Amino acid sequence: MKCEISVFIFLTGVFFTVMQAASSSPDEDGHSLKARLIEFDAPDATTSNTGGCALSSSCGTLAYANNDRGEIVGYYTDANVVPHAFIRKPDGRIISFDAPGAGLGAGLNQGTVAYSINNIGEIAGQFQDPNNVYHGFIRFRDRRFSVSEAADAGTAAYQGTFAWDINIEGASAGVFYDSNNVQHGFVRERDGTMATFDPPNSVGTMVCEETCLNAEGAITGFFVDLTGVYHGFVRERDGTIRVFDAPEAGTGIYQGTYAASINREGTITGYVLDSNSVAHGFMRNRDGLFSNFDVPGAGIGTYRGTTAFSINSRDAVTGEWLDGNSVMHGFSRSHDGALETFSAPDASAGAGHLRRCRAFRVFQSHDRKGVDILRNTRISA
Image (cartoon, rainbow, N blue to C red; front, side, top):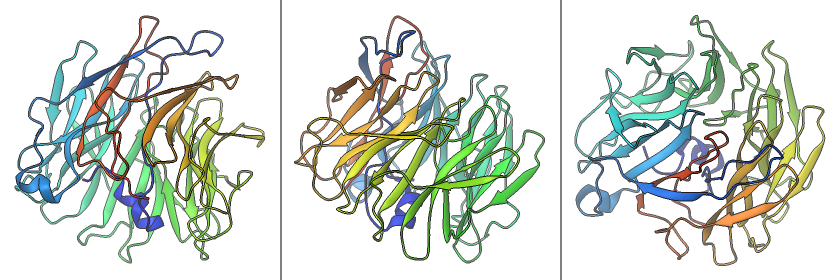
């Protein structure tokens, strides 16, 4: 349960930016309203880099997603490097929970992670059991749990099922590792019916996290082909899969298109790594038309640039950018292309990786729609 997404690293073999940035909520025209970042830590989260944390990047509080009610989910690690999921209520109360069967041994970095929450408070996530096998779960608002197991998921250590996304209909989506450690996508309907899938020519399928299953049942993500190039995809509810490559996407190993979020209208955001492995944000509408964008001042060196990670119903996009010194910053972009950049109050001003994660939320007086959470993640260029 590290600050970086281990599945992403398994696919790419490089540490890169995997962060969902904070955004102010847009007005009716899609322009950002003034927002402020509020820092918070789960009550039992470690605040020290001593002990087991000195050897791990998974220390502190990490927020992954929020809903329109202002509820936030994520996980934190305690002083024994045990991950626990949490939900933060709009009034600031933080409720910790562990999935039944989660490993809780000191120093083992197993435990429970919450990744997504819908507007009725249902949460999707995964837990690692004492044998290091992964299992997906849905936590209902009454605190009942339902465990998701893909039919072909492996049962050895570090194999299993990961539930990344949940929509308002109660459907969930994610990935699983089979017995050969190959990664595939899955979607699970509210009644428990499950389908697994891979785009054509995929040797590793990634359903992206948190906001990649929309209310209409469309799923987005990316996959790697035999040559090590990445491509985006969208899977419709009827099972139809369309593969796409955004403009400027490189065709070298680890380069290509990374889809990262889809809204109800079917607009997808994400980023490309170009032929120089520089990142550029993109938007793709339902008709397949693309527009690329870059944050002014974003670095133009290898594994620097602009990465988009979340889009709301008004086509407002949030993400991060790395400057020329590999320092990480957040941005928000309204539907008309207006960009705002920001840095969290206590964010490190140095390049490299962050040893302890801390969560943030955005506060605004207008409403809670379109709010996204900044998560500090370990990066290494």
